[in-house]
Length: 191
Image 1 (cartoon, rainbow, N blue to C red):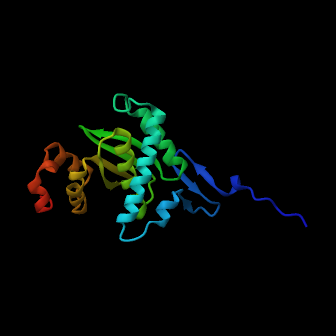
Image 2 (cartoon, rainbow, N blue to C red):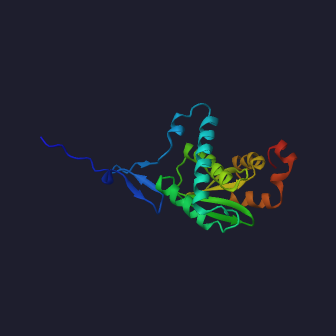
Image 3 (cartoon, rainbow, N blue to C red):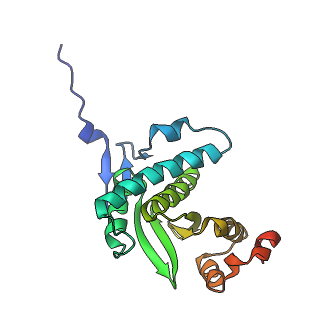
């Protein structure tokens, strides 16, 4: 009796333009490091594992792009990051600036816990690649998710704004007015 050989190229389908991996049954899949699967608890451990994964990738991507990452236009770095994320099924990303407020926009990002993982991952990527600490806030918006890159101290306050319904434009407007820097705002929990 002859055995049929397994053909992996027919089992996984990669759509790199969308950043999706699927199986013939049309179920979406993502690739994650084993450390993320073993993280447990209230979510803090999962987020720490995702940030650590991001830091590793940030260092790797920065070395691929070159040592003058902050002096170069960010296109090459973000292109390499987009390719990495798309290959693992996490969506396709691009950089977007709104008057100095910086976002990583991820098209076709997984929802639910996937957003929390991506938020921590991206904070780790940009922190390690730039050598500066970053916090990240996820803002869902019409099929894409914008991940706001900001200082870690402001991230918690901006999260409160988003939880209370602030949209991308509202967040940018408030940041350009400096509200994210006001310590008294953090104590009051928003406006």
